[in-house]
Length: 340
Length: 286
Image 1 (tube, each protein chain N blue to C red):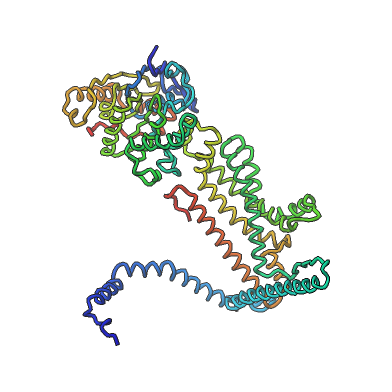
Image 2: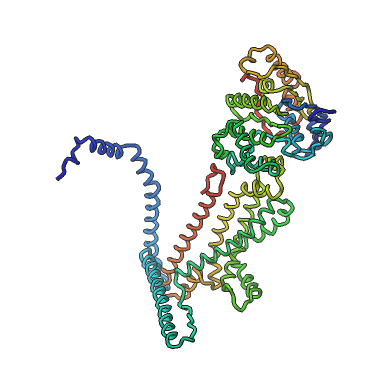
């Protein structure tokens, strides 16, 4: 055995042992511990308490579909949903493989035959629904941003336009997505007529409903950002005789960027909330439809599956907000501003 | 009639809810090329208003400003302004802030390379070449004001307008800035109008001090020629009888003939100036 490594008389080891001991006792160590406890221990404890209360309360509530599922059952369903997804994917690839084999066979015998691939028509899985929902919200949100930012800039620069548009903005801002949806559905059905539609009608209906609800925070915040540009900076642009375009590009827009991103972040949050409601009503594939289908289905597993959807919706909403926060921080020139 | 810059019977009044307030009344001033003028007066007497009219940021109600016998009626880079609060664009670096001005003024007359060199040269002139890639919120107040001066100088203005450029700085930084400004002035010999309420600063830097009476309806009270040889040294001048005489003259004007309470009584001067909140007059020697 090579014992001398652990010999405390060895100066090298002694040095490291001392370092380690002082680390354990030292301020640095206690600061690390207190950081860990503050950043991890407290949230984890709170989460554990929440799960405890949940399972205790859920067991007490008897519904027509059995007892309200607790955390364990919900986790079980999460795994189940993932397995269903994998199974469906396997089926799909097997389906295409069979087709290819069959086509190859046929081409061999009949060279004039043009092979056709029929698309797979299995029901969308939970994860497909998530992707659809994300696509829909992204479409609606981008559309809203493209409309809202220019309107906000114009309103911020012209008092007359602001006064003209402000009443409209204030009236439409509080309208619920559920009120927009029937109108949008009928208008889309009337206007969007195509033999070979690029998008599903239900998809367009949901996306436009999202747009209508998440226009307003971006318009309002952009307006405020643009109209509150520091007067001294505008004086600088006057002394430099910047033309309208340069002034907008070099002074007004950068100055308003933090506010624009605040608006976009609020808009995306609203858009994600609105989307679930819109999908439920419009029967657009997506998480909303998943929840609605499970509700209609009413099997013993439905409640747990809906709860999985609720948690996933919350998690995705949180991640979208974090993403926007990162963007907001990146584009904010005001390093002193606390963004949270 | 052949002064380089002349202010002819400037008057300005603002319509407010309380009625029309005359802020400036019949201000006339002739300034020669290369002259350094200080405007001094109590808070709210309308010094900044005079400067803004010369800059073209405000229009006079009566009278006008002539620069090289042409009337001034809009802002422009030939009358560069150094603002009190530096007014650098916070999202641009020090270099980009100056470069924006250089690009705007010399876009048609100079090549890209020349504009770059000119930007760097002006930052070197104010000793800021070491911080070119920093942003305004990463440098000190004095450094920001140096960049503001570099930006103004880079426009090659006919007149340099400075609105209390060192008002927000601590006294030690202020003396450094004053020395730098004297160096630059010795080299470039710009025509400068500077607003200040620091008596020592006015005497040390100026060729003439224009003392303004209190508002409302402020006007030129007295003009003092400062005939001290240049280059001036603040330590040598501290015991100089002529220097102390000038200081005393300015103080006498400000404190005996135009005391602040009189202005306070008469409805706290003009609307736009009451929000200015200038610090109290600094009398103590640097």
